[in-house]
Length: 422
Image (cartoon, rainbow, N blue to C red):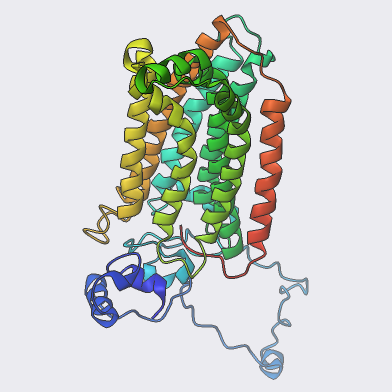
């Protein structure tokens, strides 16, 4: 029995509970009958063909030759009937790589045209709300960043000012990850290879966003932390531990290494997530959730600041929005790994309310809170900028990351067996 089928009968890996034959029988009961032979994606009504007339019969009747009008002119062919919308399929009527855990129905057929994919955003499929829960936030963030960068929402600073370079990088990361997610969910049924390509690019865009967040942190938030002030930290160490320690060297090393380390993490996370689509990976959702949580470690200085230097009093905006963001991320990770609520009642949440839609919603809330404190950090940065950002330290890093991610995606697209469901 294939793994994608076992996934629908109890858990992501059918190995977690019960024997496979018993689970298979239980799933058959959910569907109501044994799976029938696979139907064509767009079945046509069987119209009995009229038997052709023999030439002798035509001559005896004096009729015109086939394909001509009574006047002897070629007869025009009737116009082809308009294509009917494709029927939605069940889990046992689509390729194994397209089956999602505990989602029994609402699947689009494979090899849809681009026009059919676009039309499906207004049809009740199991991908419809996956698209809209990221397309609407994409429009909201596009409006917000347009106000900040182009409509002087950041003050009197023009859009090309070097101080806004980290914000440009951050905005490109946020917008790209939402746009790529919409594209992947919308066009995932074009072909198996394109499906894999779109989701590889989706993983790459998430890594790109994570690195862009680190760029914004390193310029707008980290310089204002007491933890990264050598004088303050040295005095704190002396008071708490009695050590005479100069912290300027480790702080300088951290500032120099934060972006290169974040770039290496982004490339490694993308490769790990692409690898999770291989057939040998038993828990892909847990792997992806854990892997994409690793770049969040770049925000550890803000957490330490709140524990050591009373961030709540000194910067309440950053404290509230920062920790609320991480609460949303924990909730999103819970739904992405647990596959609740469709695990509890398979088939009931196929169209509305399944875990990936909830994952999208809480991910949007987390980024929405992040934009708040990044914008607040920008305002503080513009008051007294310690050092103007450079193109090499912002845009240069983003271009280097783009090249590295393109190499990773190209490498995995050349591997034939890495086509698995999202």
